[in-house]
Length: 495
Image (cartoon, rainbow, N blue to C red):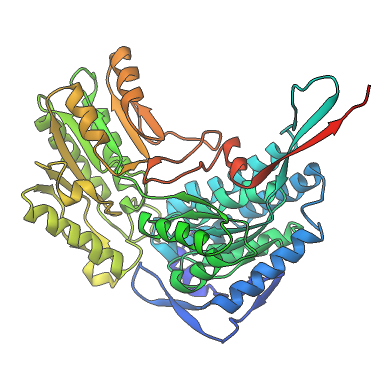
């Protein structure tokens, strides 16, 4: 039976209060902000506007939980049991969480159901399963010593996550941080706070002790800044813009030199060589990856570098794909592209489209606002041809459904253009020659290089980038490096 998502949305009761120490609370000063759905611009609820006082309360709660060992000193197998139950609780609340995610940030309900909720649950479950299988080390010392190298939980982790994949980004921080035994204070984006608050309730239901996982919604310049500056926070895991990532490093320097792990922007290059034997598949893949999630993905392949001999055909093929991604009602189960997150993002994306046209790029398809009668924030899938790598639309992260095609003459130029970016998150190489595929993949300065595909992925592989795309890695066992300290214990053995 199909679900009437509009009916469910009308019946939904939003609880926007802070969650600290296992309890729902109003903000200390009683202030709230309106949670506006990008689907139609209506207010769907009021959310507590957490500020410095609320962050301080949350951090002290997390610190107390860490220091008394209610979670940190549980055996890894015991933490695993709770986190596996947490993952099950997420799946059990699948429809509720998916609806909250779609109402909050505008993505199609079919993807909230099929992608976001299962991915968040799998992430939590995977780190739960991993934590009792990671062994410490014994160093190769001489016979008169025993040197033990152990991973220890850091303490209190501040997690600040963006609005484009609220559940998944939260899970990428929560999974390894909680599995390792830390306490967490999560600050979701003010544009998408609802699933974070519900996740914390589900964690409590699963048996996570009070105070171990706290959520304070609020604005970046208030709650986010207070969290990053707090002297009792040992590390911050941040996902967001490069501009704010710089502030995170500044806040660490101004406070206790806490560890800062930034997962930032991208301007990923998608390189198509003339020897690839199925450019239609390449065109379909780049359209699907670029227009998924309305283009609001840090790894969106927004710079498409195509050999000049096949560029005309490739542009035609990509343009032919665009009608499949026309924006629709996110609560309609058939919709494949939804709304941008808010009016500000709509104006930002339209500004980039205007800049591309002003600099001489040609909009082959799209370029206009859509569904204006809905009251929501929609933009047509847009393909630019004639883009130069010096143009604004090729240099800056747009975070919307806007793709630019850049032509190249040979392999050396393609690599040079791809690497001529402040970012280095992901890239893709399309070639039927194995030597070229390996050669170009090695030459590209990116954290992940896809070959003859894009965005195939799993929790088992690290995610992160070079240059201004950030530092450290989310996902995989490497994420434990961000939320643990290494301790050496050296014992002298008398002979």
